[in-house]
Every structure is written in C-alpha cells, then in structure tokens.
Image 1 (spheres, helix red, strand yellow):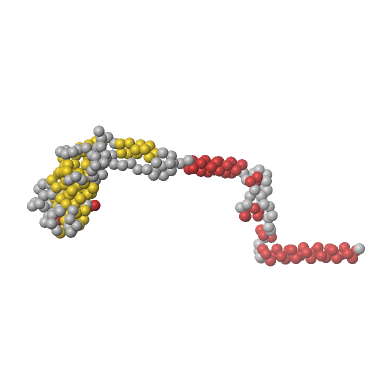
Image 2 (cartoon, helix red, strand yellow):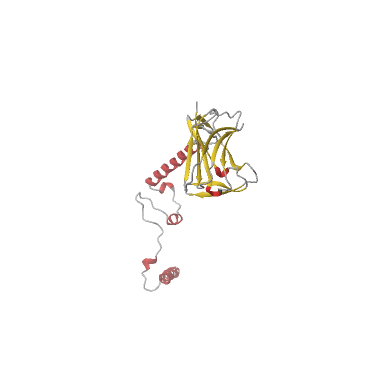
Length: 259
C-alpha cells in the first residue's frame, strides 16, 4: 500500500511539472503566468446572468439573456415593419387613364382609372418643328435662334408646313397666335388656322424685319365652334426658299372657351 501511494504521488508531481512547463512555453519568457491563463466565463451581467464566451464570439445570444430595452426596441421595429407593409399593400395603383384636350383629371379611382372634367378655358399649341411640307420635294431644315427653335425652307418653290392641331370638341375658338422669326426685309410670312373642308378660320401675318422672336395674335375667327365629328383642324406655316433661315416659323397656338 505504501508503494502504491508513492507511485501516485510521483505521477501527480509529474503532471504538475508538465503543466507548469507548458504554460511557460506558451507565455514566453518574462510574462506573468496569470496574463495567459484562459477565462471560461464572463463576469455577471447587470441582471445577474452569466454569458458564455462562445456565444458572445459567435453573436448567438438567447432572447432571455438580452436586456429588456433591446427586446422592447425589436418589438417596436417589428410592429412598424408590419404597419408599413400593410400601408403599401393598400396604396393606389399607378394612374392608367388620361384626359383629352380641354379637360383635366378630377378623380383617380383605386384601380388607376381617372374621371375627367372639362376646363372652361384653355390653349392648345403646336410646334413648326414637326411640320410636313405640302409638296414632298420641298426641303427644310431646323434652326435655333435666341428665344426659339423652328424650321425653314432650304430649296424648292415657296411652300407651307402643315401641322394637325387637336381642339376640344364643342369649344369656341377665341384667338389664334403665331410665333416666328422674320429677319428678311423683302419677304413676309404668315400662319393660318384651317378646317379640313379647306375653310380658313384665322390668320396672322409677319411684318417688317427684326433679329428677334416675335408673335402676333388675332381674335378674328370664322366658324368658331369646334366640330370634331365632322372636321379636323390644321395650322399652315408659310415658308420661303428665297428668305431661307431669315423667315422661320416657330409655333402657333389656339385659345378657346367652353360654352
């Protein structure tokens, strides 16, 4: 029995020595052993709960170990997310309807369609840039000047640009306005509002020469009431190959009111 006790004592002393040597190797010379000894648990939290070091390192903490303030904040944010999702689900669909000339959107339905209302007064305008010459062989070009962009004739016999204009049915035409560039002292131009039965409704002519954008307006109008069931409406811009870029239509507009 004494011999067995001696053997056990020797083994315990050897294990202690091996452990001391191992820590000496790990910590290196001159470093206190306490600085390298591992800690298996953290200090208690304010609530008295101990957090496992591996859980902190991986970021996996049980909800029952989280502070009450954090849990309450998560609940608030979750409720807001649900509330916002429900609000987005009830939002109105994209607007799919349109209103014609002389009217505006009054109500937008839940499915995106619209209810229109007619405006008592309004103006419809067209640009000479989109005009098409009456004669296919007429050549034109675009030009920019201070205050406007238009189209002028470059070759061929003197011609007109033709631009359709959409007016609200039943409207009463009250005015016709022409915007132009006329810097040629020899040649004057004009713009006309026509109905598709070749009826001239209104006209505005240029006068003299000036290096600036000008406009002229008339309230003298024939057959004022718009009848889209029987006619279409056009604006004619007069051109001149002789004047070239010195005579350039820019735009025209029609004022109207509803009866």
